[in-house]
Amino acid sequence: MNFEKLLSTPHKRFNPLLREWVLVSPQRTERPWQGKIEQPPSPPSVAYDPNCYLCPGNKRAGGKQTPPYTATYAFDNDFPALLPEVERLQNGQNGLLVAQTDRGICRVLCFSPRHDLTIPRMNAKELRGVIDAWIGQFSSLAQIPWVRHVQIFENRGELMGASNPHPHCQIWANATLPNLPAREDESLRSYRAEKHSCLLCDYLQLELLRSERIVCQNDAFAVVVPFWAVWPFETLVLSKRHATSLDQLKEEERGLLGDILRRITIRYDNLFETAFPYSMGFHQRPTDGQPHEGWHLHAHYFPPLLRSATVRKFMVGYELLASPQRDLTPESAAARLREMSENHYLDRSASGSPS
Image 1 (cartoon, one colour):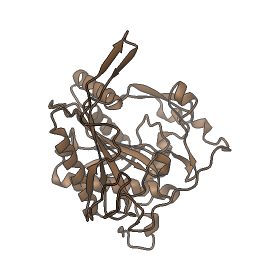
Image 2 (image 1 turned 60 degrees about the horizontal axis):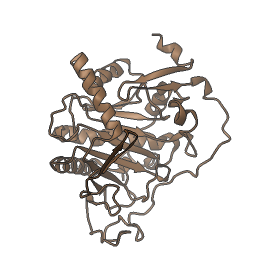
Image 3 (image 1 turned 120 degrees about the vertical axis):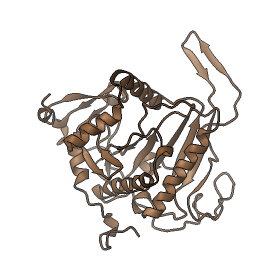
Image 4 (image 1 turned 135 degrees about the horizontal axis):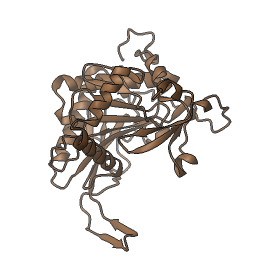
C-alpha cells in the first residue's frame, strides 16, 4: 500500500481493537467554519476554592464532609451511576426487550488538595502519588469477588462534561464487562490465538519503526496518534513492555507513566494555549481472576478540539448514522503535537519545571 497517497485521498482505515472503520477525508481540512464557537476554557486560578465540593475541608453536594486531605483523596461517589447492592432482575422477552440489573462501585479520586493543580502542572512526586493511587484502587477493587472490570477515567474541562473543575478522575468497578472493553477483549484474544503474539505489542513496534505518528516516548511508554484515530488529536499511550494492567508496572515504570502523561498533556495545553479538554481512560485486563495474557495496558485520550481553543469536533450526522469520520489525518495531528514544546506555556518564564 502507498501510504503517501492516502494523505491526500479520501480513504477508510481499520481499527483492529474495535474492528470498525473510520473515514479519513484529508481534502476537507480547508473548508470554512461558520458553526458553533465555544468559549475558550481556562484553568482554575486559585489553590483553594471555598465553594468547591472537592477542596479539602469543604462540604460536598450530598452533605458529606471532605476531610482536610494533603495528598490524593478517594471516596465513594455521592451520586453513583452504579450501586454495589441491587435486586437481581432480568428480562429477555423475545430477545428484543432485554434488560438486567448491574452492580458496581463508583469512586472519585482527587489528584491533589490544590484546586488549580492539573496533570500537566504536577511534578514527578505529585504524579507518582496519582499513579500509586490508581494502582491501589485497581488492586483493591479487583479483589472484590463479583467485580469483573475496573475503569479509571478523567473528564477534563466543561466541554467533556466535568461537573467540577477541581482536578480529579473517576473509578467505576462493574460486575460485567462494558461494551468497549468487551470489544477490545475479543479482538486481543482473537489476535493472540491467530498470531501467537500481542496485537498492541506488534502495533507499537510498527509505529516505532515508522515514527510518523509517534508524539513522544520514554524508556517505558510511547504516545502515538493511532493510525485509526477518530478524534482530531486523539492519542494512545502504550506500555513498551507487555503488561496487562497497572498493578504489573515496576517501580521505575510507575514514575515513567507519570512522566509520559505529563508530557502529552503539556503538549495538548500548548497546542492552543488553553486548558485542553479531553476524556482519558485506561484499558486493562478484566478482573475475573483469569490471566488475560492477551491484554496490553494502554490509555486513550479523546480530546474534542479541532482548529482552535474555540472550535471543536462534533460527532453528528454521518458519524452517528454511518461511520466515524475525520478530516485532519493522524499523521498531521501527530506532527503538530510532536512539534509542541514540553515546557508548559504558563511556565515559559520559568526554567521548565512545573510550579
